[in-house]
Length: 295
Image (cartoon, rainbow, N blue to C red; front, side):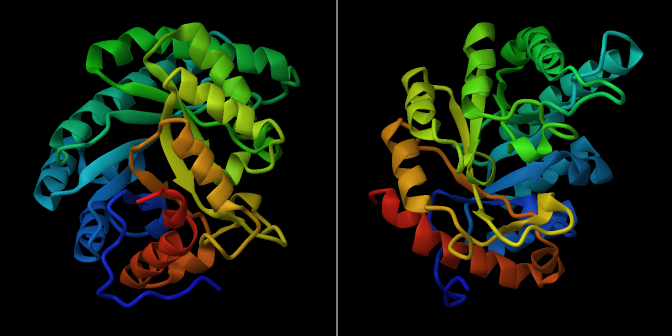
């Protein structure tokens, strides 16, 4: 298990607590937990923001004194042209507005980054290439809105195990192909859980750095045996199989110097006291990620 840290240990200044790691905490409580534990950065999710409304969410972020590292998540736009696709695009435009507002409310250094998950195959559809092309088209359609709002759209490739139901963009290379075809307001997310297995990862991280496309770096570990819901097969860094030093050095060498979010989906962690999780995250980060940051 990951090493425990004393409650007084200050989290690394680049460490961001992603709300998904304390999934059941309402937004106000999640922000309070992060601030009380000494974090300076927080990764927000749209659902808790929607529960309180954007106006109140903005006030809560302002009061917290925390940077916003990203807003998760939008996307899910692989539907064929029609009403469902139009609704998805409208929802993404609202997410762009939310991202801009929350970043503006955060402490200096906040990043207006909206994480995009492409979505899976529409029901009855087996055309993976076509679905990926529709996702690319949707991102291109949203680019002017993002540009006007000062928001970076960050494509998150998902592990191939999720290609059917969640993410038809499976590799960092595929995400970069889309980003480079659209414009400078499109970035990518390097999420260790989704990309650690990829033999092309070193080359693709370097490629992303060369074009300044790394908009977010997210970390958690890959745990086996897989959970019944494989989305929840994540853990504290150091508890599973990922070499965080190697990936982090590559991301750092590629020029990324922003916040690093810990985003863990795991039932036992969600059920644990939020303050304990915040301390445990900081300890795991210090043991596995921080040594590769060079400072």
